[in-house]
Amino acid sequence: VWYEIVQATLKRNDVKLVAYVPDKVFTPLIKSLHADKDFLTFATAREEEALGVLSGAWMGGRRGAVLMQASGFGTIPNALASPIVPYQIPAIMFVSERGTLGEFNLGQALVCRTMRPVLESLAVEHHTITRHDELEFIVDRSVKQSVATQAAVAFILSPLLTAGKVFEN
Amino acid sequence: MPTSTSSTAPRSRTAASYDNAKVVNRFDLTKRLVAKLKKDEAVIGGIGNTNFDLRSAGRRPQNFYMLGSMGLAIPIALGVALAQPRRHVIALEGDGSLLMQLGCLTTIAALKPANHGQRPLPDHRWPTHRGSRKSPTRSRSPAPPASPRAPGPQTRMISTAWSMPRSPTAGQHSSPPASTTSRASAPPTATPCRSGSASCTGSECAGWCRGS
Image (cartoon, rainbow over all chains, first blue to last red; front, side, top):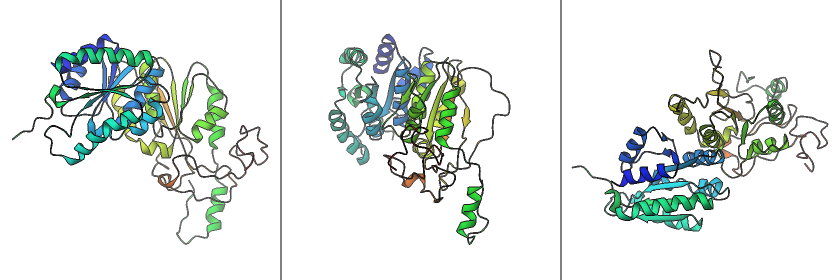
């Protein structure tokens, strides 16, 4: 399952501090991380704040990742512009791609369209992951590269991978 | 905290009561803090004046002079505290900056019991207020801990007034609310110097007052 692969890959790369803002699609990953005592998993009030914690943790010698929804990404450009990019913090970001492939919420759709241009304008590497068979390769290699080059990376997890939000009734 | 008893009280009376108040100077406080550091305490400066004060109080490699990340001094300090649970971590943050990221306090409070046996914190200190008279953070000082804290790792948060007057004798006593101040810097006041000394020639405040 996708979230088990993500969790195992993070653990293997010693990325064991995970801050998140809750998202329905990421809920199984969040629950699984909480259940794994090797991880320090905690919610933050905002995505910016999570990036701040990751920055401090990196300065203290510990690798971290942040989980957020695409709409949450809309709140972090300033945190990317400082401290993440200028201070060369290898922030590992997982973004649950919302506002595409069948969602009705126009607000999410607009943030979804601005997300990649923002990442590109800040020269932050990003990968949209759609397939299980590519997930481990992309995450494993990119985490290693992120740490080695001290540059942030964003993984955009497509509904094609996660099944997206399941609409009830 | 002196306050006017009537909205029609003469301006001079209000000002006089402020003049008689004991005011803590932010830079002086920072200098005292740095002078008391003993080990490898990590100190995270907030955006703007808290950062400049920290630098002016004497450079140390354990300090982080943050630029541009308004509101993130406390989250960054939390990250250091989580990564290095044996190290004492201090965040200097302005009240306006804190308002931009108030939610970080809930994160710290929530992590307290679940932090792998570490206790990164709660010793909230709010020692200085007077400058931001209209700020919601003013005069909301939490009561001190009822019992002595157990020794161990902790994060200390010090909120300093965003628009703290440079001098207790400054003529202008009204400060804009934090929400209306510029993100880039505090409003330019300088009467006569942020060190609080009327006779400062630049040596007490690391040159801040020169040219003002």
